[in-house]
Image 1 (tube, rainbow, N blue to C red):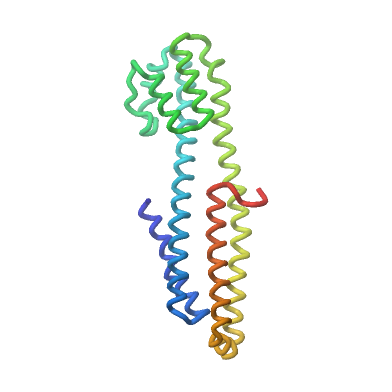
Image 2 (image 1 turned 45 degrees about the horizontal axis):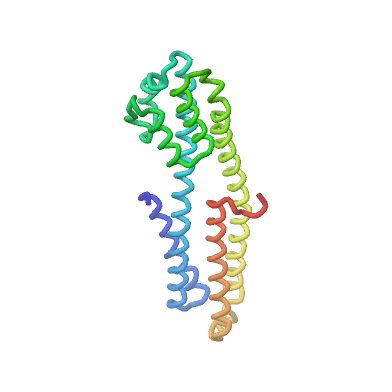
Length: 226
């Protein structure tokens, strides 16, 4: 987990203060803050997984592009790789010449990206049998490019949908705060009723849970309407 990710946990004291202001019970407010802390942890795990996926898509796309350009001036894939090695990500550093194609295949299998796995297979095929490098690699190269384009388009659509839903949650909190302020002492009297206080706590719990469930849906591409 990145250091900056820990900043997300600063939300938990804010949730505690908001909950305590609305329901005036520090134990329930603390439990709600703990619930939010758990949800943040789960969301950050999905965020890390999503970032890793994009990193794999990006560096595999980068590798295929550099290799395709370099193979214009050579027929040896390892010579082509040596010329571009300094510009590649860490995953592609230090590949040996004797097992170049098989090591790229191993990286592709670890990435588990169909387009890049096909590209690695074509490198293996070209290394063993020769042929027209560009005819062999055209389809998998296009697939690597389309994977990146599709990911970025989907991310843009998800962000727009996330903003729309975020506004609804903001309005939900605003309504609760407005009722608390507008009703004043009458709201305070209602809080003395255990059923009302428990009901309000359940509303907050469901609201917090569904809010972070939205973020989990964002990172797993399960937002409705996309």
